[in-house]
Image 1 (cartoon, rainbow, N blue to C red):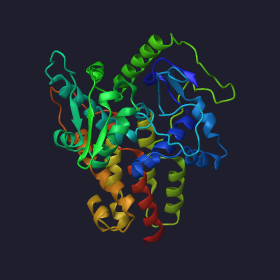
Image 2 (tube, rainbow, N blue to C red; image 1 turned 90 degrees about the vertical axis):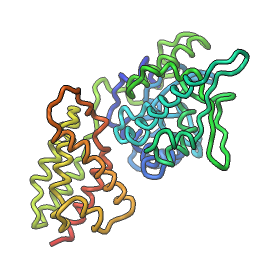
Image 3 (cartoon, helix red, strand yellow; image 1 turned 60 degrees about the vertical axis):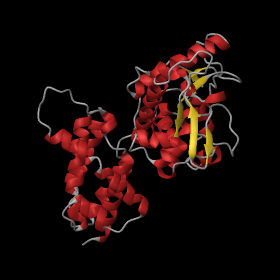
Image 4 (cartoon, rainbow, N blue to C red; image 1 turned 135 degrees about the vertical axis):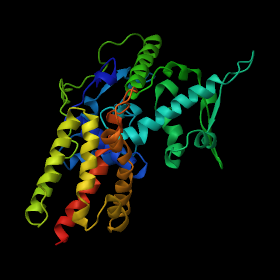
Amino acid sequence: MKYVHDLASIPLDRMQQQFLFEIAQPYITKGTWPTWDYVQEVHVRRDQDAEAILASLPYTGGYGVGSAFYAFTTRIGRLQPDETIGLTVAAALPLNELLPLLAKPFLRVLHHMTDIQSSVVPQPGALTQAVLTSQELAAALPGLSPSFIDQLPGLLDQEPGIRGVGNAGAVRGPDGWRRGVTSTVYKFKKATDLGEYVTTTCALVRKWHSEQIGPTTEPIRENPTTPALAEEPDPLPYIGQGILEELQAAGADSPWKVDRLLGLLGELNSNHADRHPHACLALIRAVMDHVPSIFGQKSYAGITSSVLMGETDKKYLIALANYRSPGDDVMHRQASKAASRIDMSDVPPPSHVKALLDQVLAALKTRP
């Protein structure tokens, strides 16, 4: 493991990002985290060592029994095959796919927890502690998915700054769950975005470790045979080269021309790598408006309503349609005196666009 002061400032290489994505994939598609056996099996089929990649990831705090630590994964060190491994909220920094599914709703909940804790009137001799319940949360923050709310106690307990212990632990009942809020939520009052949250959490973990065990400035355990942390990131492209090559091959055997589509996707990859959210949203909107005729449809809505596809693919395409609003914002909002709020977190996860491109591939191969 590589000790670092702040996970928010550490780039990951391509293999490390892909490793995190494989752990995230079951959560993205099914709402569950995988076993370590699953992660190992996926990687061994690629001639990759999952244990070595896990050991190459950065962490802060301490590495050992009783130590406080924070990492992109919920577990570090050696795991048994049947043990579950998940990702912390910090993993949404290198994985944009987790921003709308995990990080953004988590930050909404965190600030709500701060609000309800602040509303409790301190009483001499009594514990000053708000209570968060699944029912109250669903009413207070409309838009949170039921599956996210159901899994929230486990997600909160993987975040060391707000972990529920003692009276704060979650209790489930027939009507949902209830959980105490601790005063540590005040530490995150200024954490308005994901990077600030991760930086604050890392600072708290370092402080706690120093108080309990002593200051840590070097890795407690370092395996010299594991891959080194990249000095410069080599990010995965938004749309992989394999899909682009499949589209080009399918277009060569089809009367439909794909040169403009490939051009749009190439520009999308470039702008995503350079972190230009306005260009990304405009290009994704252009792709959505460009492909309906391949399906014999006049609009994107016609694809989602009329084209036969799997239930999971349809969910991805419907979710992608929800990103038309930020696309409209980018393309049609006139200049004003208000600052723009568009950033990279408003760009849809690549999985949504890839699902659309998979349907395009199928249409190119079957439609005359």
